[in-house]
Structure formats: structure tokens, C-alpha cells
Image 1 (tube, rainbow, N blue to C red):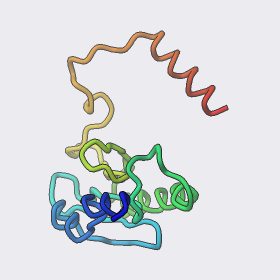
Image 2 (image 1 turned 135 degrees about the vertical axis):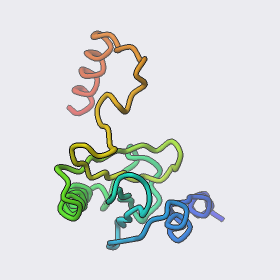
Image 3 (image 1 turned 180 degrees about the horizontal axis):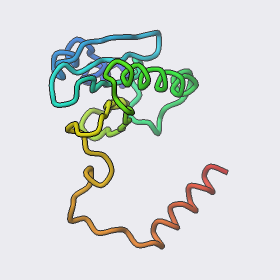
Length: 146
């Protein structure tokens, strides 16, 4: 068994029926590269997952046809969720520590709902990083982007 096949058998999101049951979600759309599932529980109606069908562990490893189509698929999914829920906007979050298969958490948001963006995502006691650290990272990203 190759490493990729073994990884896919252990990956929750590669086993879509298991993932759908685990997250209590339903698949609402898919094509040859992507699938969109809406979670059927929790405080945010329309909270969804957009994920590549192919096992891609993290966004830093995104390439090929998924990379070429990500923008249009993400725009279509977030707009569909916004319209379906009457939300003002749809936030996109990418966290991958618990499930190492690239997935975008899509959260429709309306003023007054349970979703808290911005500083609410951070430890309220966290200290600000110093300006020099921020500037160094910005300069490094600028060099890397060429």
C-alpha cells in the first residue's frame, strides 16, 4: 500500500460518508475537484465545509487543477451561502490542525448572530506582537511573492 493510499484511508475527509456523519453535514454540491457540505447542527445555519476531493493536507500544498479553480469555486460557494441565509457576508476560515485535509470553513454572518469575527477569535489575554515582528514578516512575504 502506498503512503498516499494509506493516508487517505486514515483521513476523515477522504472518507466522505464518515465525515458527513461525524460533522452531521449534508453534501450540497460537488464536481470533479471540490465538494461543498453544509453542517446541520450548531448556532450558525449554513456553516459549511468546502474541500478538495483529492487528499491535499494543507493549503501550502495546493497546486494543480484545485489551485486553478479555487477562486471561482470559493466565490460561488460563499455567495450561494450568503444568498441562501440572507447573510451580510460569508467568512472563510482555514484551520488544519485537527483534520489534515485542506478544508475551508464557510460561515455566513448576520449582525447579532452567534458568530464573532476579528479579535473574538484570539485569546483575549494575548499580547500584541511587536511592530518589528510584523514588519519582518511583511517584508519576507513581499520577497517570497516576488
